[in-house]
Amino acid sequence: MYKNPLAFSILRHKNSILRSRSFGSMDFIATILFLALVISSTKGLDPCGPQPDDSDLLVIPIYGKCSPFNPPKPDSLFNTVMNMASKDPARVKYLSSLVAQKTTAVPIASGQQVLNIGNYIVRVKIGTPGQLMFMVLDTSNDVAWVPCSGCNGCSATTFSPNTSSTYGSLDCGLPQCAQVRGQSCPATGSAACSFNQSYGGDSSFSANLVRDSLGLANDIVPDFAFGCINAISGGSVPPQGLLGLGRGPMSLISQSGALYSGVFSYCLPSFKSYYFSGSLKLGPVGQPKNIRTTPLLKSPHRPSLYYVNLTGISVGRVQVPIAPEYLAFNPNTGAGTIIDSGTVVTRFVQPIYKAIRDEFVKHVKGPFTAIGVFDTCFDATAEAEAPLITLHFEGLSMPLPMENSFLHTSAGSRACLAIAPVPNNVNAAMNVIANLQQQNHRILFDVINSRLGIAREACN
Image (cartoon, rainbow, N blue to C red):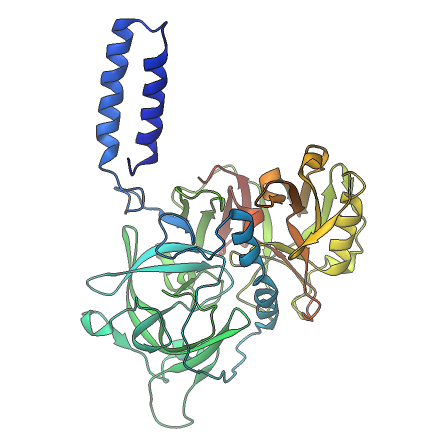
């Protein structure tokens, strides 16, 4: 069995040629020689290994072939996405709780960690020599963190500071410590900078702020500050750490400075792309030139989040009636719409979701049922008549293809509209554009120029 899917595809093509009676003998020989050459050149490539001469980072579905993490059971696509989306309410509540420099004490208890997050991971190396870690990509968090050796409740894969020649600790007197949410320092004297944080709504951890080299594809970010986790409680903390791509001062984008000039983009592959990965492009080089953009908005109430101006939503050709206050950005309260890589299914506040659903059911034959987090499920044979949904932002529109709009049950008999309302226990009026709707799109973040670009792209 070929490890490389391209070689496997070529073999299938070769077999179809062999079965063709109309194929000339010279053409046959030439084609077989060509196929043999291509197969021999692809057999040695590891689709899950570092790609030669590639400055982009692979973005891997957390349950894909190239991920070190095993999928939960049952492992059908629909049930896997349902399981991941079931964590969204806690995630949205967590996002709504993020406030500027709020120092909180979080209880830490021992416990066996179980992976139950729905996300994307990237391969990075920490320390000198580099230690490989698969870290979760998170655009709504700033401080990166990894489990360190001796951690209580962490997974088996940890970062070992003792084997890195470039490792160093950071104390409370340094400015980086004051920029960490949940930091704990004595009123007088010097001490190591430690902090406690919650994550995902149901988990927490304690860590020390440290520094070391961070390896990203062909780049090295020296003296990168991150959290070295020593204890975990709950099941939502990523097993091998998190890479924060938020817009706060401790994020990768801020710490890398001139190296990436405040610019990055990603293309998230579909959850169905078991064999393939997307890409994370860091810096202005190689970014799409002709891409439509919308302004990035910033809330001092939640400075890490990427807000955009959502101006309306269409179902088919109908722009649904939505009261302006449910779309409006309020920098003081944090209300508005954010782009988030860690939420699975796009969530709208209740009045917006109801307006979308009410228009959608006019065009699709019922009956409609609820399955898990989705309350607009229908017979899959009616999917052909289902209207597409378009998100309208200031300066651009984002039509959602069917693969970004619907999920099918394991048996394929039911299709579900893949959006949901914001949970009732979330106080802030915040809409979240999630990763299922972002899949197979290039999402460009230009923090310095305060703009966000969106373009359709085959990420797989």
